[in-house]
Image 1 (cartoon, rainbow, N blue to C red):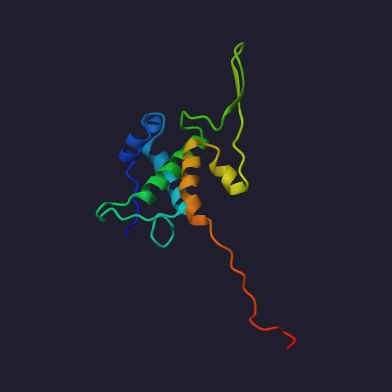
Image 2 (cartoon, helix red, strand yellow; image 1 turned 60 degrees about the horizontal axis):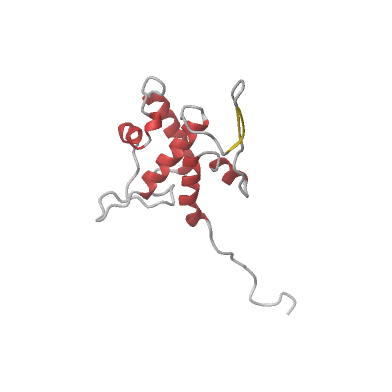
Length: 144
């Protein structure tokens, strides 16, 4: 496996809402990438997602997930053109629109469900974070 390195041109191609270099600079994308790296991990040791670009066929799961996470952070910061939830109210006179944030079971889930990119990241992450329960107990009765 390998570490994922940000390719800004590739990211802009995959997410065209961020292709205006005058509105969102490479430095802004790079800064948000550092935040994604801290949150999600880009190395084998930090991330649960597989990434084997040299395998046959190649596995790009981690790179795709990290790009969704980057899109999510950029959208939350207001650089993307996407909305942050379904429309709940709209008016025509004096143009007003209200959005509802998608609600998750946990604070972490609610954070990722604010944007469509974040929801996709969360759906990719979910199989890796759902696990079984371990009941650890003594194999003998403590009083004999």
